[in-house]
Image 1 (spheres, helix red, strand yellow):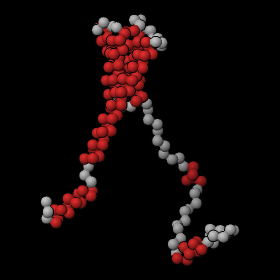
Image 2 (image 1 turned 30 degrees about the horizontal axis):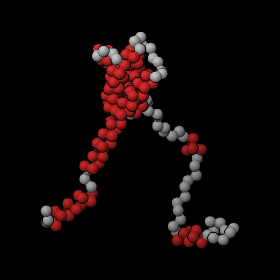
Image 3 (image 1 turned 180 degrees about the vertical axis):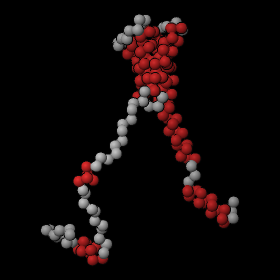
Image 4 (image 1 turned 180 degrees about the horizontal axis):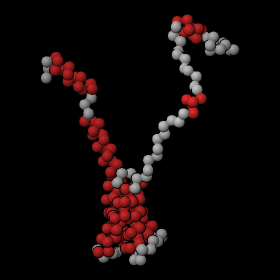
Length: 175
């Protein structure tokens, strides 16, 4: 195309028009079509199953740690096991982290510090890290098992070319 030559008058455009292969023209957009509201997907509400399961799991972990002698290490282990179990049960990392924080809060408030006080330094920060790691591990195992289950379901589906080969063998008479 030469400089100054428009696309409308190009040889390709003239050839298309002459051969009758002109692309269909769109109708012009009207104001009502532009202003009509389109359907909008509403946002999903947050998954609160982690907090719904983390609360009773944290209470059970604190009660179990108190029944076993209430050492700080025992309280952390019980809270981590509770967070791990809830992490297996709830879908999503946010739900597992929320449950783990609740388990830590009960262990920190009623096992490490007897009067329901939450502290943030030293042993408390280590306990929070351990319990969060246990909750994340439970959530990761759940996600990995779900991916493996989905992969197994995809692998179990018959492939079209395998079905065609099987049908072709039956038609040809070979087993």
